[in-house]
Length: 269
Image (cartoon, rainbow, N blue to C red; front, side, top):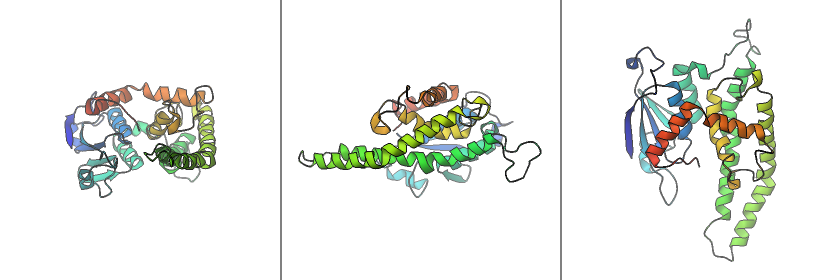
């Protein structure tokens, strides 16, 4: 484990005084979903430090040191003062509520404060995508990764047709039809975003976009084994344009620079 301490924000923190902000530490695991939390920290411009952890080269799981932070040994995890917070959506919501209110859409329509059904379209999309990302979309990408690992497993040549067949059945029977549904849905959602988009929840970047950045950038990276092989700029132009828009954020670029400084390269998955 190594660390980079007291990384300064790009500009003045959003708080009136840095002394008002408890110590924030991002526990970073290589090739993990931690990247979107690092992006968030750069966007909200608060001082933080990073502690890095490596994966076991045999199991690809996090080394045991991360379990000292959280019993499950998972990343991302953030310590803020005396709190340890795990799960990406919880971290994004917590940090946005305290330091990045602009990343949460206005909740109520005028005159509807506190009433069920009185929420804005932007806010309802925000809440949906905060949960959809891990609850629906990422599960497909994990199964895709497992199927690809089965296909490419180092087995004797006479067993390889069996592993290829198993992988092919998972992809054809489960992954491909779900990929068609989900990415068609996202293409339509971008087309119908409030205020004309270009973000999923409207015309402003939100924490939900940061959550969605991981799976979207993975599947638009050009490697069919991480998603649908037929996902292209021609079939899903809005999805690819959205991915490019996210990457153009200055805070995203700063996060990538820090990842390269930590790992020597920027790899999502």
